[in-house]
Image 1 (tube, helix red, strand yellow):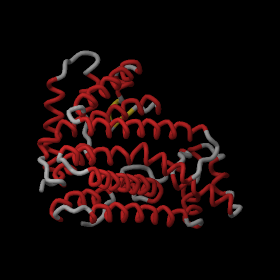
Image 2 (cartoon, rainbow, N blue to C red):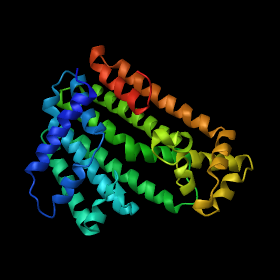
Image 3 (tube, helix red, strand yellow):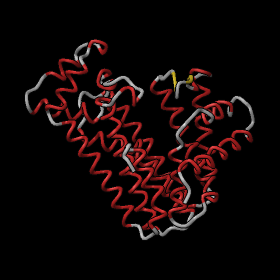
Image 4 (cartoon, one colour):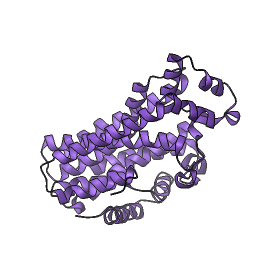
Length: 317
């Protein structure tokens, strides 16, 4: 079975070939720019892993892998516009380097290119469209939450399921379909990806609040300081109301730069929110592994996906 790095090398070669084949006009130049930025390529590699899991050849799923990565980058291009983000992976975002109109149109064209690559097999395209719509629904929920005074924890989990987890599920399903897997097996590997994606995002929320900045590369508590509605803050506010605690609300009423992040994280820990979030990560991780365990394929084919889960959750293999 291929390792992550071996599959990533194949993905990078396919991306490079696709970029070289595109015209260098004003529509395609932003796509090429974004696709050439350094990236982990987890989703396209997952396509190839899903294919090899069911006995297929990774080379046969490279177009699907590229299509998934093009769609992912399309979402990033449009998300950056909505968030008014100046940087993406340390480089100017497309709308900053060019302009908003160019970024919108170029992103739309990336979506078209993705669909063309994924259209070789009708089953793949059908699943892709289903999940792509889910990603859009998740983004809309995320924007809606910014305007709302309160959000329930279960609403947040549904938002990250749609915005983040379903595309990993889609990637694995696409690879499985290329390999000719049965519908039940395709559903099961998709559910594995969804649970893994949820565990990853919830753990990312925890790392923002409690992780070592030297390892995460981010300021500790940046989301809390910004008042971002992550699982931790949403659940913390819920439990604060239930226990007549006011510390979080007091900090949120201050200007962002004046917020005491240490006080906020201490309250979250005292209320048991950190423990709840860690338990949720373990639950989704365990659910993912149980689904993988149940697949009737040789264990050696499962190893790359186990390693991927370990890497995403920073576990020791």
